Length: 447
Image (cartoon, rainbow, N blue to C red; front, side, top):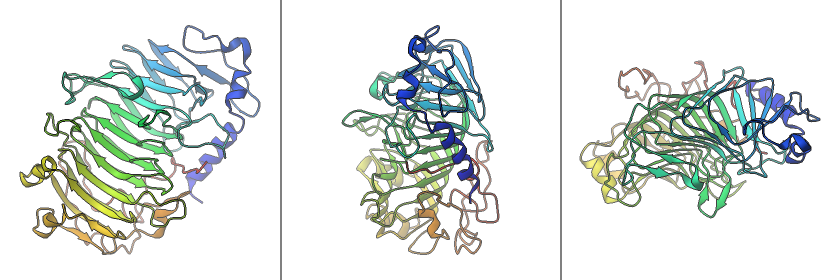
């Protein structure tokens, strides 16, 4: 049994009675204190006092693991405010009020979990009754550049103004954080992402993050320069990793696990939907990605596409394993996007696509054939077992006998710039017996 399952049992016990009805029984204590925190309430079935959070955080505030924090409505970390969340802390988004945590420009969120004690942001509904979209999610707004005319944008569902001129803007640090069952729908095509990086700068640090069972995209970047490392998107209801409006950050070690009841692309990437050549152009550098689609139709018929680059984005995309996305592996869509390939801005290489009906769309095939995308192989075994498709416990680690991921297909080394790590493998996770960084802090509950 994986260690993550033991962590989930502990969290499940805590959440057993955590429902909207239980929290509202607080009665007179429902009046906020200083517009932020209500006094702790002892709720039957929960082993820690419950603190309901509302309104705005305007100064320094610390959340600790001896309480359960319930987000009631939109909770804003205002400019000048800092929220520090300790390892092992549990935060529940209230379904009835669409609990959401929003970091405004100039605010900071420092959520510092550990592998043994991750921070968990989840639904307030009982275990077994949770579903995608139970609560809002996490939105971070920064002052880094975006390619929206005027230099600023407004987040979906009015989640804040973002954008600016500071690529080094710092919105905080997150480490070992798991976010699940979020992505409330406010109206058709207006759903919240699990974690939205809206104009976020590279001054912060984001690593060891999982977004699970989100209704809309798991991770999405709206411009900015934010970097990310060690990230998992699992059972997402739309796209797993998504970017637009000029994201130019760096990413390494990204893992995707799709569930075909409700999923779209593993990666969906844009520059600007309305004017494909606006600058700064989306052009992230991404090394070491694994995408596990859902090859059967037991849960549904979606989740059949892996990677789409479109609407003028450029990208560096190297060292990837793609399997199980039934219909399509990789597509490059649109004149402005193809121009980034022909002019050399887009760089793709060292990857394997297998177990897919059409590994390469016609738009990508010529670049593999002529060597522009070097060492991209199709319809050969990349070394992942069928456990990659196991919804309750996916395994992204190639076997020690991996035909390609074990080293026969050499990775392309990322830049030696202080962010990227030197690698000896392709895909998000090194082959056994090396450490599987996805274990010990993740969990994959279906309800």
